[in-house]
Image 1 (tube, rainbow, N blue to C red):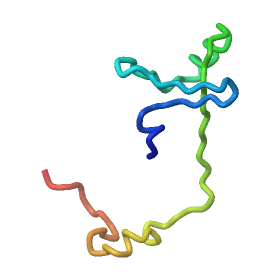
Image 2: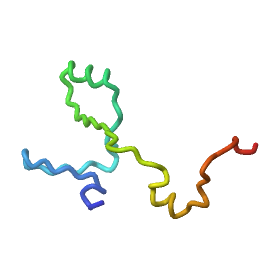
Image 3: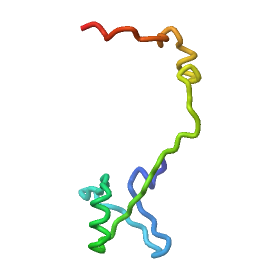
Image 4: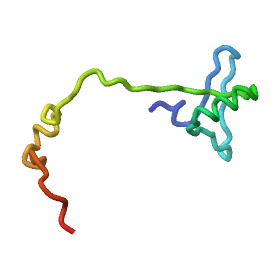
Length: 85
């Protein structure tokens, strides 16, 4: 992490400004559901949204994971019963 990220400094190249948040200011970042995003857009609020999705390219077998191969004695092939109480 570099100094700018660590101190939450924002550089806006278009406006040629640098924003240093005040220490008492807490930056707000939260997860929003689709309904909240739609409401905010309709209300013409300033919203910065990032949409992310994951796509599975290929199915990975557990035995193919390096950590599982290295510690094969820790990972049993089959779990037969529930853990003891």
